[in-house]
Amino acid sequence: MRWLQRVLGREQVQHDPGRQEALLQDVRHRFGARVQMRPAEQVEAVTRLLDGDDGLLVAARILHEFAEDAHTDLLTQAYELHRRTGRRLIVDRRNYRPLWREAAPALRWSLFELPSGFHPYVQVVAAVTVVGGGASRYVQVTDPKPLLAHLFEVLDLTINGWEYHRVRVDTEAATLAYRLIMAARDIRAAMDDPPPLPPPVRELMRRNNTVDVLDPAGNRVVGGFNPGAEMRAALLA
Image (cartoon, rainbow, N blue to C red; front, side, top):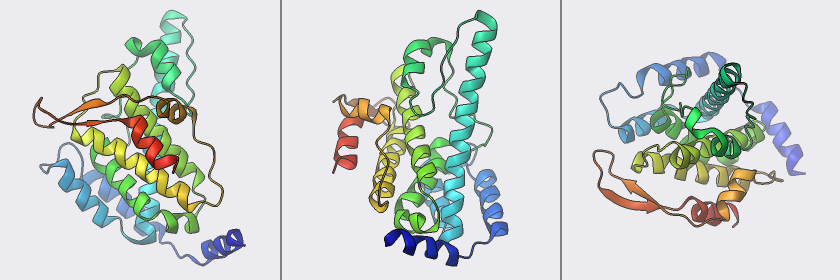
């Protein structure tokens, strides 16, 4: 009867939509690439700001806006490419890898400049940290499936950028990918019946490729990151 307990729990939760909107705008405008603070310091500050149930739901909204903007951007790029050249591309948000394999030279990787204004290594990392830390509570508060889909979607976009668009893999990029994997693990663990893993995750788990991770301030290699191994350890346990 856990499902009944969760439904009843959702009915008892009191939210403050006004506070949520204020938090969302605060996070959107006070933090990001132009702020004179290191990304890690900003992530810590945003994470502290997004406390309680309202903060948890705002974190999910950040991920929703970011994923929606990224999907819309790719749809627009595909439309423009078809308009100019007649070439048709399939934009499947459950699996962007075939799109990038087919058309990477003709596509832009736009996660640093989406209309939402959220920076992937600042607000998005903080939002992922919050929903991962509050996974059991989030499952009580609302349906976690859309959030889980967004976590996997942003992970797919992140790693495709590394593989197909030469996006620099520094410690900030690796932190984003790692926290996305960990948050997906925590959300799935809190669900009674988690959905199957999406195709890009299953594809990457069959691989064992390690990428060099660079110092954010230079080109010194400071470590390695193996997406497939991290996913196997977190999502198949």
